[in-house]
Length: 198
Image 1 (cartoon, rainbow, N blue to C red):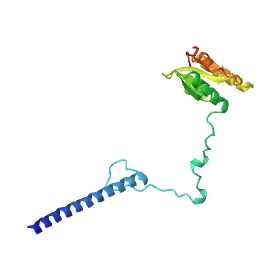
Image 2: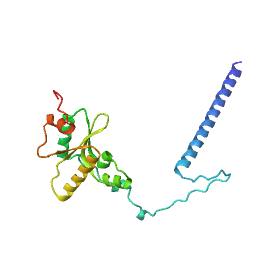
Image 3: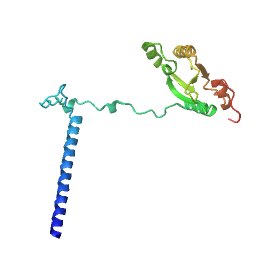
Image 4: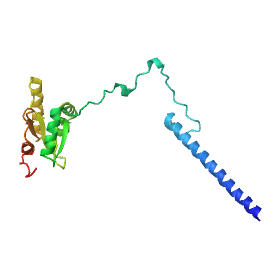
């Protein structure tokens, strides 16, 4: 009786082991097929066919003509995102109007938009030093340092001022040599006096 029980148990175990190995083999075959489809880039036929598709031609590049990886051409990150004077003004804006969002180095096109693709491309060439938004992400003002001088800088500032005025966005110019006090910044940027105790 015990022998029959052991033989039956052995048969059941052998069946499960065989079934397990069969499933593992099927999974490995399916995984290998997916790998080949993904990485060997065989073109799929346009219509179903019984004949397997021809493998894609592989271009062989001689070692001496290989190009360096793209990452090698990318310059390293700048040491600082903002310069010293921009960092000071950013911190002043954050402390003076903490209930607003401050964005640095924003494309003029992101604030004013363009009427057509050509105008949007032209606006994208100009940057605003800071853009102040309320919590609903509505633009309150653009903040720029006063230009140091030069016809090009003055022309760029005039162009940006005209675009912002046409879009109904207030432009605030700050003298880098005489930054406003913390309690003055809200009035300059938002046109509101600083809240008591801020």
